[in-house]
Amino acid sequence: MNRSDFADLVPEGGVVPDLRALDKAGVLAALAHQSAGFAGVAETLILERLRAREALGSTGFGLGAAIPHARIEGLVGVVVILARLAAPVDFGALDGEPVDLLVLLLSPEAGGADHLKALARISRALRYPDILDALRAAPDAAAMRAIIGAPA
Image (cartoon, rainbow, N blue to C red; front, side):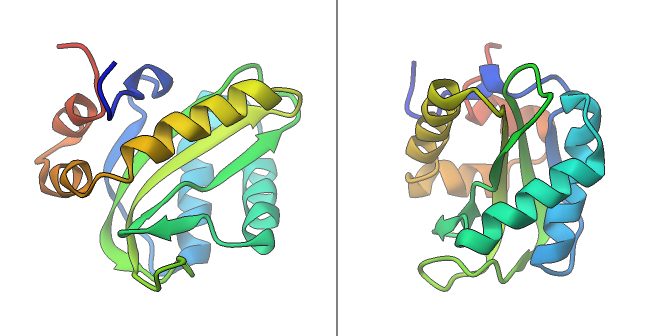
């Protein structure tokens, strides 16, 4: 496992290199929309849970990256979406920097250990500036996927 390896958590089609949103609310709505089909639960439920989590404190942790996450009743397994915004938005990140890279993590309501393990793997990868720079420079979804450790 390399330091950016979380590709096994991202479903085929789960990398969005040009997510379009004008603000944090729009980002959460777009991520809920992108993930609903993979999660097999209603987009409105995902959005409600993401908003509730963000109300507790921003999931923007710095260096232009955020890991919005929520536990969802009825979800069978972990769902992860990697997205790059067309333009950075204010996400209320701890360092005050706008966010342009997001990794959405959805977990089953009762998936405590799996949720925490996935969150740790993702946050470890996103703390490296060279990985973040590579994700920003990647020309497409396939290149972004390769950066996070997808097998060739």
